View 1 (cartoon, rainbow, N blue to C red):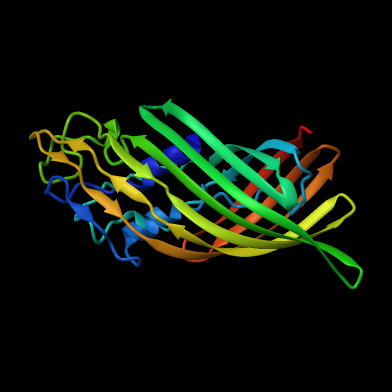
View 2 (cartoon, helix red, strand yellow; view 1 turned 45 degrees about the vertical axis):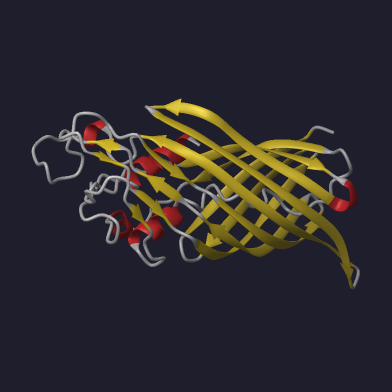
Length: 283
């Protein structure tokens, strides 16, 4: 999670061209602003962490995942709809990480959850929570055993801190330029989303293989919070509503009670990520 905060702090340095306090901006889906917000929605997506597996009632699996955060297209860091100026100071961070817990329910259902508690790092405060409900069913075709998993998931969160104007970006040379002031901004970014997905998998000895697809409804929200040297407070908000299809595939290696997984997750309109996970069956 620390990684995502730093990535956002750089790539969402949008500048403060609007001069209307509390202005609301709803850029079109094709705008740089919307595409950049959607780009940073991809790593927190609560996709399945490993190959489909039917858990017994009361089974508990704990673990974690890590996602190397890719770099957005440099074009997206230049706003074109909500802001007239930009502070082009893109600083990308390497990873997004979080814990995962899964509990087996009756009839092949399972409940999954993840929570990154509020953590203050470099004057930013981060928290993200996710939940999912899935059902796994065994299928047999021509003597081949496979598992079908249907899954619904949702994520809410907040990244608060100097996202638009860090202390390093502050300047007093030009009143009409971004970050004209002496105190860093106190902005927030909310990577909110929900979605559904289906995956079909099979297992060969200790190796589980799977592929799937789904759809995500993205509702990212950004709010500026910068007071410039003239006393003007910018509370501009940026909201977008997007629907994105996804495809993914991966493998899970079972070593006793430990499962190690890797997944390629593709949201074609926004980003491609690799998800690495490890889980331990407690009971």
